[in-house]
Length: 167
Image (cartoon, helix red, strand yellow):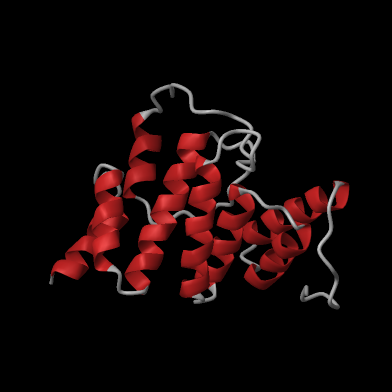
């Protein structure tokens, strides 16, 4: 049941509009409204689950965020055409200028939504970064270590979490 008058989940073009509205709400940090849009869109794909998890994370509902992130990762691993929902497969990346690379690795947890057009590798990284932060909030320290290692210890905010854990 949705927040907006109990509206039922929908499909087709309305589902796409609800997904787009949810993305807009994330960009405005309107977490409850974004979550409701994603639930009502009735989409069963990695971007939707990640976006729901991001909303849950920002309102402090960490158990649900963690569950949704595990589902997003599973859906991302599905073969294309079986629910992955991502339109661009993994591909070689052009090397970004240093300023962008530094911003990516030195910055805090991104608050950006995951779109169906996001390349698979980028989607996977977003999912893992949020999952590590969520695991930290839930006291699942070994998982934070594992994810930081999977990501090559590239992200400063994850390394700071590890320092906090190791104190």
